[in-house]
Length: 355
Image 1 (tube, rainbow, N blue to C red):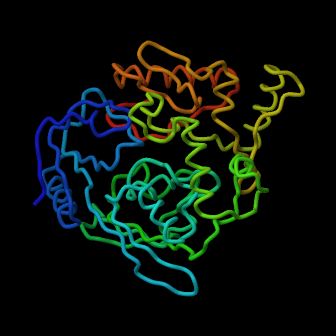
Image 2 (cartoon, rainbow, N blue to C red):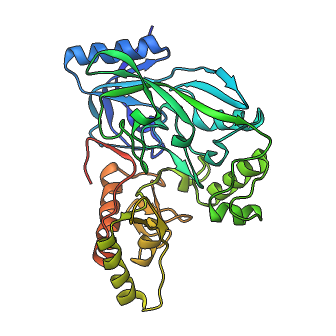
Image 3 (cartoon, rainbow, N blue to C red):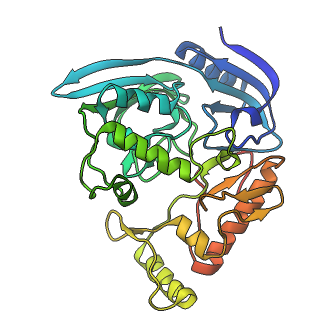
């Protein structure tokens, strides 16, 4: 039976260690409990917040005025295998990085470059979690979810998930509650081709080469630790929501404007990162823009700061409020807009607050 309490401080359930109390807090450890608690809250007309690992969440200092359902479902199983491809179904409440570690240990390739990412499995399809050249959309076969509109459990295949860069049908809409995710992984001793230049350089290989799964995981973890992106209680830089802003994807007109502004600000020979996207769009680096707009690592405003290791992470070293964090985020966003004409978009989900 699901366990519930009242006025539970949500700061203890987010990696930022920020957030006020939930009026009602429920711990659901089975799929039946998860569905039942959400359905009951909907029937009462209450706001509902589905909470996983809290690694991509910014919660208001005022807390949440409804029911918070904490997803604690567990279980991983191989459900199909053919021609070296293995389908693995994982419950939404499983912690993500231990799942990746298990895949590497069992010789299953496809998620090794997503090592060290905090949070739970249920969150991975929501924003199409990705890092170092891999996105979960490359391996997700289907997502089972509770449809709050139809009040039934549904299965969405990869196409129905409508994955794009850090986005999916689940993001920005509370209709679906992820119950489990099925991934198609490959039996292999070596990784998928290394697609990210920084990772290839770390490994001493060329982009497109393969390395052992363990080598890929170890290198990714080392890179992430160097940026404060692996949770560590002894490192205040890891008290963050990871990358606070997504990398901007620019239309041709926006790209031309950025080229002009970069030349005006940094000189005619200045170059900025650019990565081709679908069509004639180009993705650039939010971290580069933030740094060149004058917000360097360690930039501090009151009790919050930009990470001393990575300009994309906004951190709470201790004693901060959500209002403090958002003030820093607005300062950074405004500075980049003024310098380069690019509007940064937050990556974490904002609960009870706006940027």
